[in-house]
Length: 177
Picture 1 (cartoon, rainbow, N blue to C red):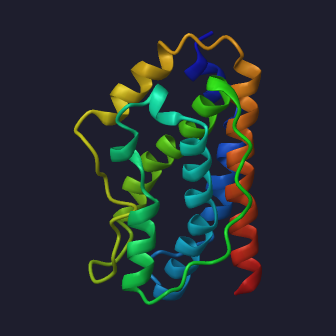
Picture 2: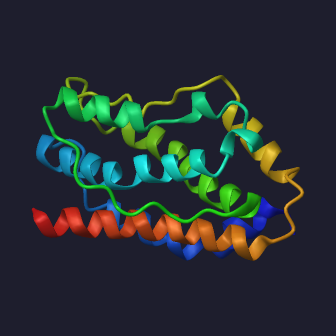
Picture 3: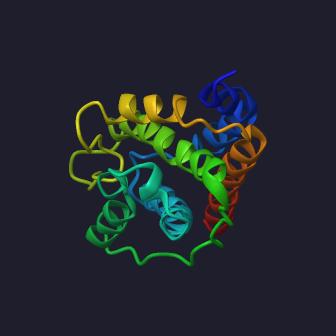
């Protein structure tokens, strides 16, 4: 089984949970859109920082073009929404954990591109809008498939940990409104 297949199969429940919880956010309404962005802002900067601290650029040399925390924070600034407190950085040790964590962030771009269509034109949506070099998702999947990682359990655990952070962030923000 490829790492991609293992990650997809063994995190399907997490993915479904995140999709269901984030489905409670109406991106047409500025208040709930801000709440949605705040939930993401609790996680994305932390995970990106953890990936960078653990050396993600060794695995993905184009990492700087893949980062999105700055886009998220720019959208929030345009909406005059201060960043919320960050959730704790995940502890990412080893290549398998890096691949698992970045798998979740890269996958969220696909969902973001679909969600961007729901954001009214007068609201900033650079975080959700497709960006990066053309074919970057395909290139990511190819690198994932050829990563040579044999510790799939560590990759899956890291991915599930990042999904859990998104769930916790969404719950915190939904409870606050």
